[in-house]
Structure formats: C-alpha cells, structure tokens
Length: 56
Image (spheres, rainbow, N blue to C red):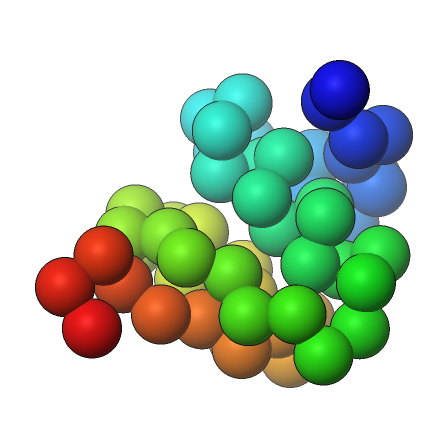
C-alpha cells in the first residue's frame, strides 16, 4: 500500500520509492528512514526525519 505523499515531500520531485519511504517516516514520528539518494537524504534532513543508508 502506497502512502499518500504530502506536498512538502512531492515538492522535492524524488522517485516513487524514496517519496513513499519518507512519507511513511513523516507520518510515523520517530521512524528512521533508509534511503541512499542524496536528494532524499536532504529532504529527510529538512523534515527532521532520521535517516540511515543501506551500508550504515
């Protein structure tokens, strides 16, 4: 099930996967998002979503 993507995340024009992961984390406070895409990591930082890459 794909979450609704908030406009604040849509504005970053990320891919569907990154947008979905960040939308989930945005809606579920305290969730750590796993993303590697630099733009997605910057979006997460702006929204104060904790992130981890696939290697870390």
